[in-house]
Each structure stands twice: as structure tokens, then as C-alpha cells.
Length: 248
Ligand code: GLP
Image (cartoon, rainbow, N blue to C red; front, side, top):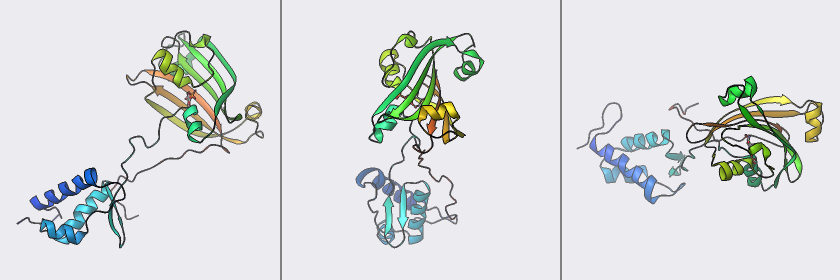
């Protein structure tokens, strides 16, 4: 006979119950489908309903199931590995059904200097391609972007006409694929020249986003500073509770 221990963990039968439930969650059942009731599980495994409830609570803490008062226990949606996805401007706009574009594109090759060099782990004398773009959605300015790419990993980039997606160009031409990024977002206001470029009133609110992007080998491939109109852009996150303290 399986014994329920003082701390609520069952022995062999409790472990079997957990393995069975995980099998259902990962196998037969789809997200939002219902698990068997506490009573059914208690009967089939020969354990108390308290033991079943504890096993379900544990799966709840782990984010595998959720419970709805009076209705039962259901399989949770699988977690997305990246709660904030790493996307390009082109992908962001297409996902919103908008046509991405760029205005005022300028590209030059310059020494990194102290600040950009530090961001890209380059010496100040090493060269970077500096790309300036006003990014548009359906022709309307959305964001102003300064992007710096080390010249040694993307030779000749500054001599190219960069019209579409930079990330696509980096992947297709230089086999440089952005895999992760450190990103920070600050609130700011648009000074008169930036406000004019974005076609909004002076000192309108904006987001300043700084990104250092890395490839799969942890090589820094981009530093970018983007200023987005706050009236047209928002940051949406899916956030998960990770502690056991779900009471408040
Ligand atoms: C976003 C990022 C930039 C990146 C850009 C690439 O705007 N904040 O760091 O350079 O996407 O966009 P695309 O591939 O559309 O040129």
C-alpha cells in the first residue's frame, strides 16, 4: 500500500500518478483539454483525493495544468521558449499586417570609436558599417534607427544598397544570423529634428531601444539604437509566475 507521507508526497503510487498525468499532458491531451477528475484518479490509483490534489497542485505550480473552480483541471498551453521574441523590424511590421519600408537610408564605414567599440567589443579604431534609416510601416515613419555592424564580419556592407531587411541581408550574404540579443528600453521624448523625421509634434514621447545582437557562437554582430514613436508602438510580454506563492 502506498503511504502518503507527512509532507504530502506519496510513495510509489503517488509517483505513478504523477508519471501518468505527465504522460497525458505530453501525449494524448491537447492544451485546454480536461484531465480526469480527482475522484476518478483517486479510485484508479488507490490513493486519497488529497494525494491527487497535491499532485495536481504541483503540476499547477510547474505551469503544466491550470484549474478552474467547479470545472476541473486542464492542460496548459506549452510555454514559448522565448517569452519576448527576437524579431526584426520587417518581421514586426509584417506580423501586424503592415508593409515595412525605409526612408533616408544612409550607410558609411567609420571607426567604431570608444562607445560603439565598447558595445561591440571592438577597439575604437576598428571599423563598423553605420546604417541610418527611418523605418516606415505602410509608408508612415515609425522609428529612427542607427545600426552598427563590425566591418570585419560583413566586408563591403557599407558599399551596398540596403533596401529591405538588414537581418535578411546579413543572413543571406554574410551567413550572420542573430540568435540572441541584450536589449534595453528607455522612455524618451523626441527633440525637434527627430520629431520632424517621424512626422509628430516636437517632444512627443518615444521609446529608445538599444540592442546588442549575437550569433549562435556568441559573436557580437550588431549594436543598434532605435527610437520608436510611443503613440504607434507597444511592447507586449508574456510573463510567467515562477514562485509557488500563487495566493497573492
Ligand atoms: C529591429 C531592431 C534592430 C535591427 C532591425 C533589423 O528594429 N531593433 O536592432 O537592426 O530590427 O530590421 P530589418 O531586418 O527589418 O532591417
